Image 1 (tube, rainbow, N blue to C red):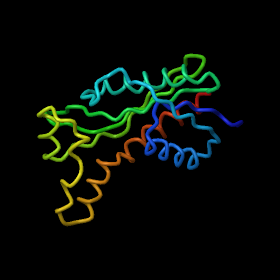
Image 2 (image 1 turned 30 degrees about the horizontal axis):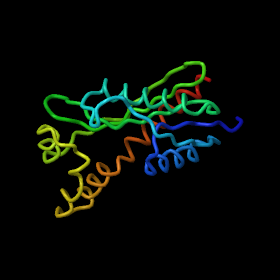
Image 3 (image 1 turned 90 degrees about the vertical axis):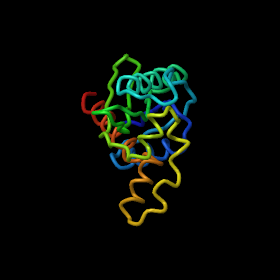
Image 4 (image 1 turned 45 degrees about the horizontal axis):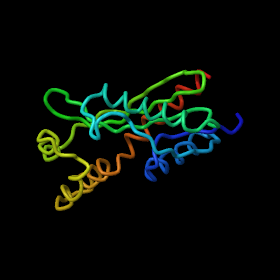
Length: 170
């Protein structure tokens, strides 16, 4: 496969780094064009539907801003209420020049109780991720805190799924 140009609807160094690692892992030769765009949704999406719309909007805006790109990729981390508790997840979407659109979500992970309280009280969770589990013993607790702060498993899983779906159908 020839080199592909992906316009990604973010300038987040973290998300770009995760995407670069993933592209290497799956063997996709690509140029990434980071693009500052708006998701056109709330800063902290609280439903699967809103999160998916945000990722689609990011993909649309990214490809619109980069005429040389073969496809736009949007990544949106969000939360969804399930049985009274919020879960974190990520949705990634691809839109190409032929208007083919695909979206995929990561697994959902129930937020620990302290995070539940923050999000239910309307606080922006990103401002309250540091330190919650630092005083706790155990590698598992530290792993969970790191996973929630950096969101890598969610972002990587959603991007892997959407890219593999897209290229399996192309």
